[in-house]
Length: 294
Image 1: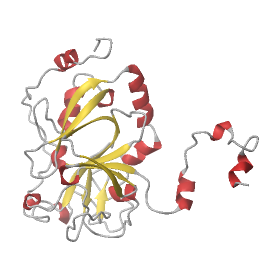
Image 2: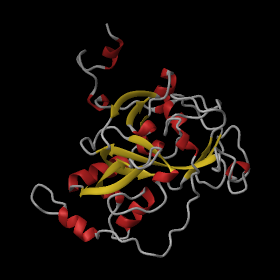
Image 3: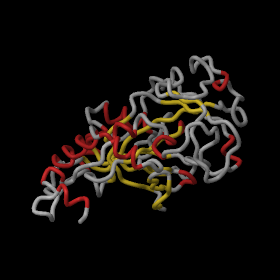
Image 4: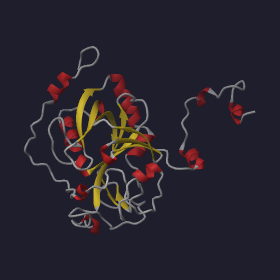
């Protein structure tokens, strides 16, 4: 007799309230093994699906349509020591979820605050760059499976800051563009596209279409899920189940090319000069659902 029959009704089925029951953190911890989180990596300029620290699929297309369901409140920072090894993924030596001070769980904090940290000095990294890099975590779902898995995506600084045109905006400008017209980022399908002019992996963002009423409800629920909450607060190593004590560079975002030594600029306040972009009204006019309404 199977152990599961102990909980069955009539000896052949689990109780109704056990249907679609998700494993809790306690069970997962007792099961042992690596992490079970899911994320998207853009290493090598390719969209890679990572589950439990292992690559399970690739998307060689230059673009991917997703729905951003949640974002970290602050831009984070991470410092890795050692030498880059292709394919290696380990925890940062020190990191900050708010970009102000090291996270309390960091086992080797480099300073009491990020601003005065020695790893925040130009030249502390490769070339003239800073050793501690900016990044931002978002939780997303795929357009063709909004009710499906929630993935973490950790974006490097060049995909976050700066300016671009209406079809190729970094994340911060894209959010300001939509938000300035009263449109939540979570209410649209977003195209993430690799900037082929960049020597290292860089994504730009563009609104494709508005979500339907049903899709918006699903996206809202997804954004409040434990997976989405974990995606925006956990480091890549924590999502993958990597030993946080190992100080080594990750292979999350780029292959070792000479161009990786280019400095990553500090985020700067965008000048008051208005970026000429296509109006949201015109964008929405071009969008249409099945019944022809935007």
